[in-house]
Image (cartoon, rainbow, N blue to C red; front, side, top):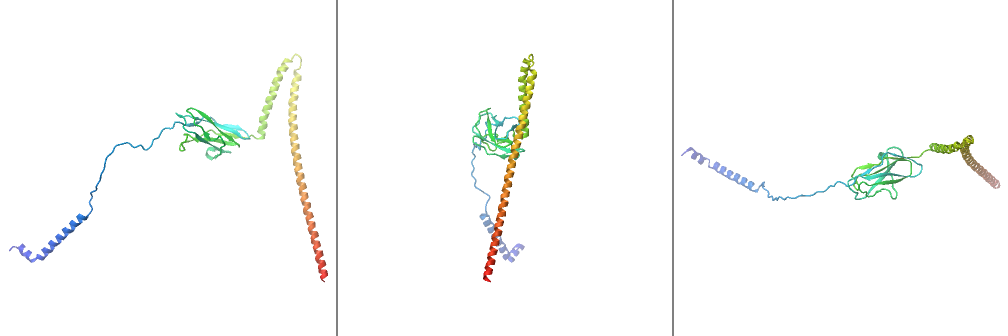
Length: 287
């Protein structure tokens, strides 16, 4: 017998155990392989061709622009109507109306720090304008300050650029400046009177009336100045009289209040004295 056969006969149990363990290992491996997930997936795809439209954007037909040039300076102390011009500079007509607003500040920049004003009837609407057409935007201003008009560049598009008009300033001149403005008018009237008188003097050179007419014009100017001074004095006298009357009435009212307070105090003292006398009499009767 060979050595291998002798070894097999001696270690038959070991060979059996090895065969059993191999068979068990193969079974476990096959079971795990069968029950485990695979990487295969079922897919079904189909190619199609075509165009999909997400949205359309068209260039606007109209663009609004303020056409007034330079800031306006208006001298007024009462409510005054202000306005500015706006034009459709786009390639087409406006399809719908638009709106405008007015901002105001007493002093400063109305675009940055101005207050949005309430608009009245017939204000705040820009009618549809044809290509190249313009219209006036109006507002009734009630107080001195700086005003500015504003609207959107494209009608109906709230996301478009905001455009501003030129500033409109309203100044209320003081009484001194008003007098200064009146004086040139007076001077102009005097000059016209002198001009009218000159032809007359030229016509009457031969008669020697030139000096008389010049003296009359001087007298007229002096009389007008005297009348103005008299009116100013009369106004001052009236104001002083009114002030004196008010002071006198206030003094009389104070005197009446003082007299009433004194009388009330005297009555209170008399009542207290009468009460004391009555109490004294009652105590004497009790004794």
